[in-house]
Image 1 (cartoon, rainbow over the protein chains, first blue to last red):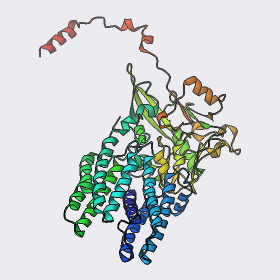
Image 2 (cartoon, rainbow over the protein chains, first blue to last red; image 1 turned 135 degrees about the vertical axis):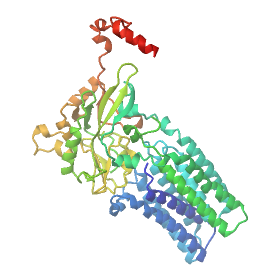
Image 3 (cartoon, rainbow over the protein chains, first blue to last red; image 1 turned 120 degrees about the vertical axis):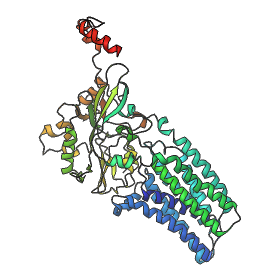
Image 4 (cartoon, rainbow over the protein chains, first blue to last red; image 1 turned 180 degrees about the vertical axis):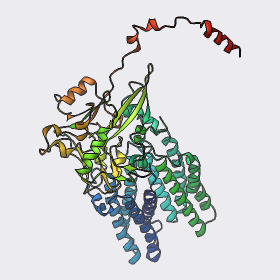
Length: 293
Length: 248
């Protein structure tokens, strides 16, 4: 799949922002007043910045509000609703904490649950797609949620939780790559089932429908950068998990904490780039461009 | 609404005969011609006369080589457009309700004035039947020529999809696949029509008729004994040449 920068930024930044909101809503740290203002501003900038970035890949962003209508079937629509609910509840909670030095705990709990639900809905936009076997497994929402929780804990200064969650997300990321590499073959979709010609014999693409490029190839048969995927995986896991863990285990200082957060962010961005670039859509079979064939 | 209807009164669709398709791409051209001038946004081209031309098409013809275990390879032309699936994943993922499946005839359509161009429906389709028009930023797909098949301003013989009307080898057939007595349903039953990617669970309405079995080699064997080599070992000049070349 085409790793569009707007989508990578959207999923990473909003995941981080909603992760931070999750911890703030539960009272980790139990901030009020000016420090609450600072924490909530960072969380809202990340969450809303990510959501705005997602509109950059739309063909007709002026109609984006219509995306609220189909929540009964569409994960994209559910995500839109959940993000608005989460931001509203957390906004009310934040007003109490910042301006009245009171944390209305139930509001925070609901907001935290909604923040996680938003990240889950985001992940299911990808996880629901049977056409992309690498994404179509429960590990997709698991990793999105884990990274959101880990990044949120890091930004919220919850060193112990951050250490545990970053370690877990690193392990989970490794498992996701390992399982993902065999998903396409296991999906059972081949050039033979795609064309229905398998009863005759082995199918190979002889001639594409056109000599040039097209939307389908650009969007769903993206192959650039796959040759470096192993190196990028090592870079991603190092920046995302190993380096932040080392920095957090050192005697605490704000500089090291900030470095750990930046390193984690860069690692998650790399991992998310791979999430798209490595994902193979079954449409590639029709063009004879799938490695597993 | 992006909820799929539990039942459609008809299942209008195409039956494509992979045995008779000659790969002339006439259906591609007639589809582009009709649909760029009629329903919805035109099918735009980018850089059409330049070095890197691309464009929006609703129907494309692939060609595949199939190698049986025994015998020679076969070349099969493979037209592909929207299969108007009963369980269309492109419809349910749509956040705005622009994508829908009609209850009356089962046609899957896009209401372009509601489409935000997010592209998720194209991701959800396993067949590559949807293409985003890069000029208008809306999703384009086969409408089964909904503006022809019910169009009483057209002569009756033209009230079928442009691709079907134009096909010179009669490889494309249009009809109601929910009616077991329709010509298309009979054709599917007789020729063993198949679904593409059945494991994706989309329940496509369009069916493909597999190529008929080829003649086997032993059927042309009447004269074959007469064509056997008369002499296994070359004699005369060829024999001398053979021996001389061996020695070199």
